[in-house]
Length: 202
Length: 202
Image 1 (cartoon, each protein chain N blue to C red):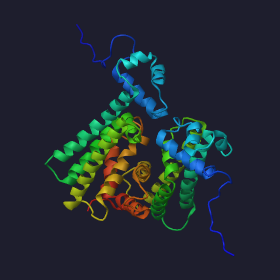
Image 2 (image 1 turned 135 degrees about the horizontal axis):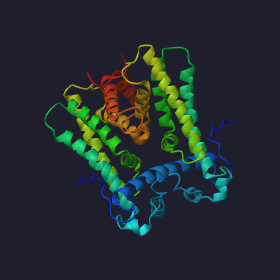
Image 3 (image 1 turned 180 degrees about the vertical axis):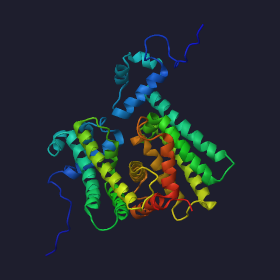
Image 4 (image 1 turned 90 degrees about the vertical axis):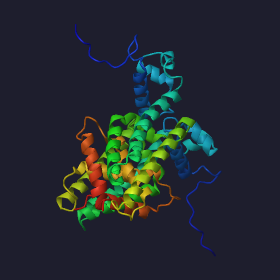
């Protein structure tokens, strides 16, 4: 008797019908053509299925958007939450750890984070996502402020501005990072920490 | 006899018909709703004019896109060109100057740079813009490499990666900078130079 290899959950029937594949394809289309310009009909055509086959899993295009944004936000929230709740270590160490783990999340969830970073607040779902992003931004600025207060970081730049620039640099990843390119996630995370904390000048 | 105050160039007739106003409104719409999701009819409605009134100035939606992207690219190219051609000063000084002037361009041309940074290459106009962006990226990476070669910057991070992170930080401005907010362009440019070159750690 052999043990079956674990396989991704997949509904029976024609391939391309499972929830994960639909979501993955939708996010890719939203990123490439824009959310507003993509219809459920476009998605069905790319998947090679009928629209009802999609509606079986997602009742609307907005539900697809929400699932994608939640995927990105849940991961980023977990990273920030853990750093905020951890007692061990200095704020500076926790900030460096948040930078490192954020890079990992961005690389592992690049399509959904890309979508998240383009959200403008055109609907209730988008506004809820922006609200969650604001919460993250506030926690990050607090962590920077704590690291300044403990004397680890310079105090001549406003923590809010530092936080925006630091995570602006991290977020820029989604625009240029290629998993098959020259840089591993670790190389990128180390480079960001080096640039931001140690500085480029000799 | 009094001297008239200078006024923005404006064609005779109903307001909202001049080229600059049409372009400005189009870019704002493209950024808010997405380029593909915005029609010339939408633009005419927002401007309160007929479609032919727009076609009098721009023969197509793509021509509007091209004009907006060129606005951003011409400015950024001028900054990079000047730094590349200047003989005076070190590469490090020229790099710091490029960062400072890029921030000024991003703030002064925020809507068109925002549009530029979202271009994905879905048409010939978009692909030409991406080509010009690549040229800029290469010049910036060369400038970083020159600054490393002259011994001003650390050599343990690849110049291409440094350049991406540095201008990832600069470009993030378009997502969060508000002209009426707490930070002047000079404050932001100084903060970026401090974070990237001097580092945050004490």
